[in-house]
Picture (cartoon, rainbow, N blue to C red):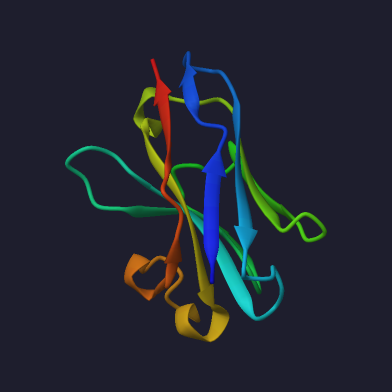
Length: 124
């Protein structure tokens, strides 16, 4: 049984920082599973923020400001967010998929089998 639990969201002023965490059970961070952070703002589609799998990918809008990392020993995925902007306001989701399922299409949310409940980030 796979479970992903996000934490670390909150409200912050523009220019501030937050670190999101995604604790996983039932899935091992390895070359078999690829992990990602997505976000969804009200009225908008869910969009890829960053991936951590066979390679690391960032959305253009967060490059240089966000860093994805993982602690294999703790089975935890992180998203360090700095220089936050109001447009970063969204619900942030952790997602997991078998790497072969998202190969070449890491931005496609429908390819990810497992999702957390989300954590809200509000930047004002």
